[in-house]
Each structure stands twice: as structure tokens, then as C-alpha cells.
Image (cartoon, rainbow, N blue to C red):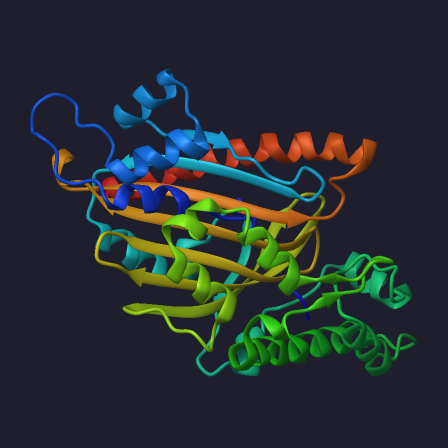
Length: 349
């Protein structure tokens, strides 16, 4: 299989967190400003208005679309103050099956270490996807698949039998297992080359190009960037990671995604990064970077900064411009909702 997140796919706390990290303790008097690095990042790359800056300092969530390649990317920043311990958020994310559940998430399943075929027992395809696979061709397919995967599914399926759907899903589950196992051994070099359109899409290349457009990683978090690009040859100190897959409602089609989530406990912040390895529809790749930065000047709690960036097809051209506008609007709405939910869930436990 080949790899993407309803969550704001995308996702992107990275830049903000970095900034927050260096701010030292502030005077207890008067409203404390943002930590120095967070403030620098926001002023340089996010460019909030004075009113938005004041809203953020008052504890309200703020969002801002970020500069991105309009032909293929949507990128958004969001931040809010959360009056709760950082450990509470980290523990919640570790339990990803509970953390990412709700109306938009049909299934969320953490993948074993090492991965097992049983991890994908609940992976199924909607009838439309099964029907599409029957007529798929390399370069013309509704699902995002590599050439070898597509050929194998069609070879292993007897479309004349009533068991065709079960056969397709057995093939998909085996491919999912092989895909995540290959990634754990070979990293980005083993990510998919999608053949759903005439132009092949190299997921590893798109991911690397996307990271280059994230100054929060390049300037502020070079070790994290190196890890994301060179895993598993490169490790990240004081970090833990796991893979998970999910079936989520997105757009017109339920989408299967496989993600690599890393939690890195650094001296000045905690980084929580979700890297999209595969998506059955829409996305080529994506990243959601969440930076959790303590700020003693404000008391117990942390700045929650989120950068969500994703690459997808269908965003260029005249029709694409309409789709892009809708996607950007939904990204802002989704980020606002995610910030409010995060703040409420963490503060009211």
C-alpha cells in the first residue's frame, strides 16, 4: 500500500512550539508575553494581527493559513494556551485509539511492534472502492496504490465469485502489513509510488519537499527534521514512536490512512509529530506537528502550537482553485475545533 489525516492533515505544531521553547520566565506582573522563540516565529512566519496576538495572550485559540504551494499544498497554524500539565496531553496521545475516536473516525488502531496481520483485522473497504479496484488500471485508478499492489490485488481476486470483496480485503490487509514492515526497516525509501494518475507520485519526494517549506523544522528543529527524513537510520534522543492506521470520514469518500507518530521529550518542549505514510484517497502525504511549551510566567500549563501541512492532488487548475478554497476554509474550521477540543479535554479532566 502507499501513504495520510482528517485531522488537519495534515498536522503542524512544529513551528510554534519551537518558538515557544526558548522564552524564559517572565515577570509575574502584567500579562506575560509569549516566550521569545514562539513570539519570533509567529511574527516572522505566521504574522498574526495585533488583535489576534492579543486574543492568543488572553488564552483564546487563533489560527492562520501559512504560505504553501497553491497547486498541491494546504498549510495552517494554530495555537492556544492550555492550563493543564504537559504529561496529561502526552498520556492521552499514547492511547491513540481513545484519543482519535469520534464521529469522523470510523476506526483507529495502534499497530503492534513488530506489526502483525491481526492489527489490520478491522481494515475494510467501502463497496465503491471495491468496485473501483475491479476496473482500475495503472495510471487511472480511484484509489492510491502502487503498480505492484494494484497488479497483485487484481491477480489474487476472482471477480466472478461472491467472495470477491473478502479476497480484496485479504489482499489489502497483507499489503498494509508488508508496507508498514518495509517502512520500519527502510524508512522513506520504502514509501509508495502512487500510480493512480498518469504521473507517478513519489511519496518520499513529496514529503521531503514539504518539509523544506517548514521553517519551524529547518530553522528551529533541525534534529527533528533529520529524524523525519532519515528514520530509522537516525534516532531522536528521549523519544518514543509507534505506527497506527485509521479509517476516517473525509470529503466524499472514507479514507484509510497509516501514520507514524513520534513523541519527543526535549529540554525546552515536547514535540508530538504525526507523519502520514499512506492515504487511500486525496492525500500524497502530510504532517501534523504539535509543540508543547511550558511557560512558568503564566503558571501551570503549556502553549499548544500546531502546524498542519498536507499535499494532495486536485488543487491546481480552474476547478482546483475552487477545491483549494474549500479545503483551506475547512482546514481553518478544523483547526479551530481541534484547538478548542484540546483545551477543553485537557483542562476539564
